[in-house]
Amino acid sequence: MIGAGSWGTALAALLCGKRERVTLWCRELEIAESVNTQHRNALYVSELELPQNLVADTDLARVAATHRVLVMVVPTQFTRAVVEAMRPHLRDDAVLVSASKGIEVQKIETLAEIYDEMLPEAMAQRACFLSGPSFAREVIRGLPAAVAIACRDAAVLPAIQELFFFPHFRTYRTDDVVGVELGGALKNVIAIAAGICDGLQYGHSARAALLTRGLAEIARLGIAMGGKAETFAGLSGMGDLLLTATSTQSRNYTVGHRLGSGETLEQIQAGAREVAEGVKTADAAYRLAQQKGVEMPIVGAVYAILYEQRNAREVVLELLSREMKPEVTG
Ligand SMILES: NC(=O)C1=CN([C@@H]2O[C@H](COP(=O)(O)OP(=O)(O)OC[C@H]3O[C@@H](n4cnc5c(N)ncnc54)[C@H](O)[C@@H]3O)[C@@H](O)[C@H]2O)C=CC1
Ligand SMILES: O=C(CO)COP(=O)(O)O
Image (cartoon, rainbow, N blue to C red; front, side):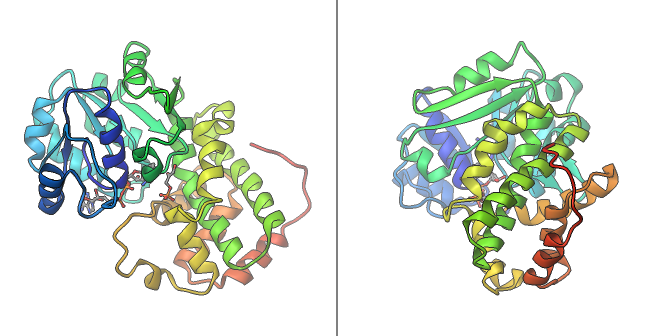
């Protein structure tokens, strides 16, 4: 497991139920020591006990060289640098499984596009993408969840699906990498919008409208990028949007709620250790939509509130003043 934040720790603990030993690569020595000696992650999900067969290692080159299946769970904006550091050490038969959700701002690229750019063709082709409604804390506690896993290489996908398949963690397979990735990345931006809506106390009807139109935007960009329309109605699309945009457990929803309640992004981010991917992805998605000529008014509104210091109420008024039109859902 490459990345020892909340989600990397949760997925590593999950896989411990199926493998004799799972290695967790940690940037932070403090995490490695606490996992190896106390079976806890001292910095993330520290209240939860971890399996005894989870072993932490801080040497990225060694972990990359000695494992065939590498699950990538570092925040999106750091993925390029971590892949760069791993690249010389990777085995020829390595299978990368991406479990992060976001779009990189630096080059406006999805994680699949970063892998395509940086890895040998066959290795990039067999990379898998796991995404869907799943809070780390709930997964560590063994509560039921279901997610999607996507891969372009049909020969690799069943084995990776099986690796991540448990009675309480059901994994559904698809070949739609673009749809799964974009659903997971963009729902975080719409979750920020939903939080803003609730922070402004606009009510449940407004939030339901926002989520439905938000999903239409996600599908519109996703289809323009080559994703399949039906994927956006699935676990990595509507499923994850439902979870993230309606739960106070979500970091992205919480960022939005605090913005809607009057705090600034700077205040919210000061001292925050955990990543809310939607903040950076809003920037990348706004630019990507412009590049592709896709209309995304809700993403544009989140961008204006986050990056142009626009007043949230005024931005919502502008959204509500848009012209009359037919209902198109993708
Ligand atoms: N937490 C959750 O419930 C879920 C998270 N995800 C996704 O998993 C990915 C990772 O998120 P979390 O594990 O929640 O993160 P987290 O917020 O719990 O931890 C942050 C992680 O970032 C790493 N980090 C910080 N600076 C870094 C740098 N310069 N280079 C490399 N790594 C650095 C830290 O070592 C730590 O592993 C994100 O894309 C997130 O959207 C997906 C599903 C569920
Ligand atoms: O992706 C997630 C759940 O599927 C986690 O959402 P947050 O990052 O908003 O907490």
